[in-house]
Length: 300
Image 1 (tube, rainbow, N blue to C red):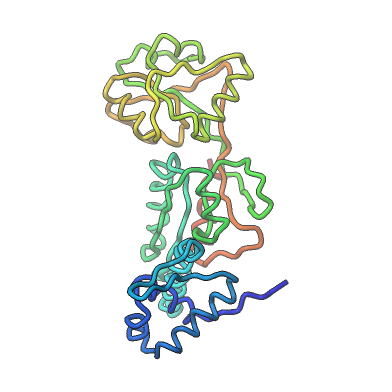
Image 2: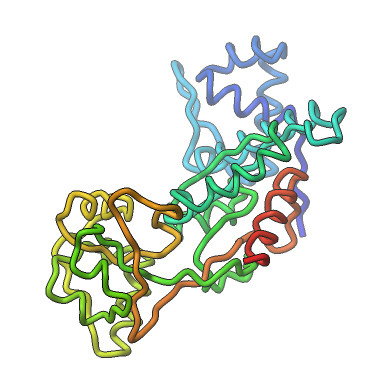
């Protein structure tokens, strides 16, 4: 197995050239000679095994490989710098950065609630939240752009590990004045008379729903199709229809206009979990936050 051999300054050289668009300006910024800067870039490219920069007479830009590497380099350097400054403080005031790739349905209501509780104990730890689709979120974790992710369990990538958090049932979201809002026993066929708002069929949630209903010889008859579940809640609030969405994506506290109700016959849920790289290590801040996530769900 070949070792990837580079130094922190090699990464800073690459990042500076991309951000400043010039070898000359990057060399001045890093207080290096241009030949020394070029050697740093060449060393990094040799370690990666591909060109990272396209050089013209007037401008320098990242190649496709360089563009893919850029967010990882930015995160690595920011975490490195943050860790150095935080080393002197080992108590609750210690700083740090946690980068998470989170599916939007969990990022909207669930994640802020957990972060709020975490910040009580660790107020100086910062968060970068990549709210991505399930597929893109897995890629971000696999590439190292995020330390870990909150995603739908079920991917078979051998390089990723899932720790299950919870089963997240699909529920009905309706206005409080809707006829179904007062019905405690709702089945899927009860939805048929009303305009239904659902997410696009390319969504992982829609794929899961369609497959589960097909096994019961049922199909969603939608009236509005949206890309984001948060949009569906807006349409429901406006009185344009009802929506089916994961409970985690709905308001967790009393809402002035909306209610959620379980849907049975059949009950359909998705498994939500923490995804991380197999064999990878987390920063102390990310380790503490992931431990809290798992602990909160264990207590439920």
